[in-house]
Image 1 (cartoon, rainbow, N blue to C red):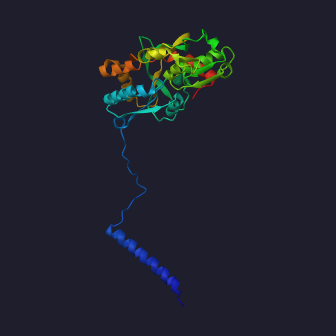
Image 2 (cartoon, rainbow, N blue to C red):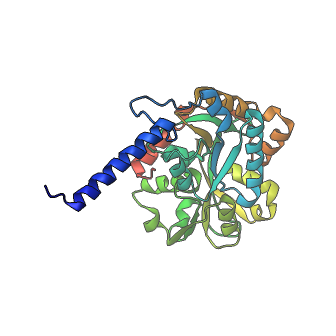
Image 3 (tube, one colour):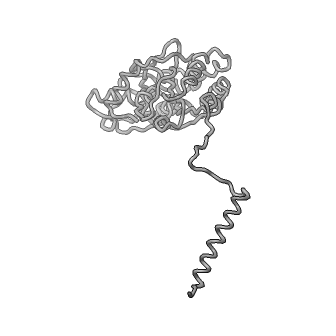
Length: 312
């Protein structure tokens, strides 16, 4: 019988491979993994998750951003000290950007404006943690201002003029005027000759004081801040209308957060004014203390934003 040399070479290679594999297993030099057996994976307990993961705090500083961010950092440091966990401040320019962070589940807590909270419709549910109180109230007004030397005496006098809005989602800095005009069957783009967004209440104040804009609408608490920080600007403007009241901007938190951490954070904010150093910081931000929230105060504004279609 004639034997094919190629076949002999092939069988020789197979026998050699089998011999080597058998030898290796006999000497236990190759690790053996039985994929039919489950492998235990270390689990992180709820307590470990609470103590290890940083707390991410978002905000859009529309009140003197370069100055107030320093105070918000101190608040974050206070939260970190009380929880024993790192607290990371995530700053954004606009209210929309903060809402997107919440919607994506990228942050745990957010300092929100009245309008930002009222317009929030993200897939990730949020809830009120606390709301700010100032001079014994959780309410404020929207003030419409013009230059002191102008002839404007009423909002209607600003038709065909230039107006400074703060932020598209802001209630006092935008929506209050849009609602006023909608009730008169018109829109800002039809009513004003021109309008623009400053993304900062103090910039809106500056724009009117320096005649860059004929009018603007501001949070009444911002005027109190300006009275202490920029009295020279405040002297150049006057109020021609007051609309309100509206609830102050709340601190919101993602709903699925660990309940124990959620309650710990609530207690930290509710008692923050009792700490001397933290209390001094709150006063710089025109906040006397944080109180338990009143969700019903925001419901009329939520309906307003729904009607206007300005939600995110």
